[in-house]
Amino acid sequence: MHPYDGRVVSNFIIQALNNQDITIYGDGSQTRSFCFVSDLIDGLVKLMNQEETVGPINVGNPYEFTIKQLAELCVELTGSKSQITFKPLPNDDPKQRRPDISKAREYLKWEPR
Image (cartoon, rainbow, N blue to C red):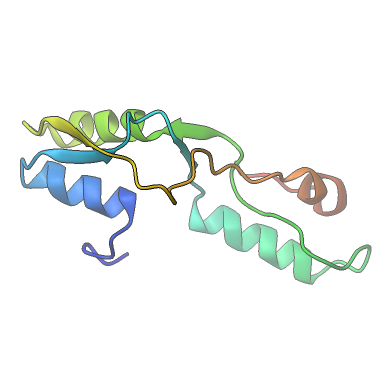
């Protein structure tokens, strides 16, 4: 992951490591789901090695964190002096990102660890 790729995890970590304010857009209640790359690869390999079904199957992590929880965790784990600041939420920012992995569970017998 490039430290300046514009994604929320890398943004928060870089801001916390530099003791900069951590910027949250909206009130921080919007959710995101994060998945370990190793879990994702395991799910994709299982998908490629099965013949029971075709079509899209979501692999990911259905467990959600709020953006505010993520920011607080970054501050805590880095020992940062960063403050959390809030700015208006862009209109196109989704409130929730949570994959439905029911097909992965059914057809691949897979879920993240």
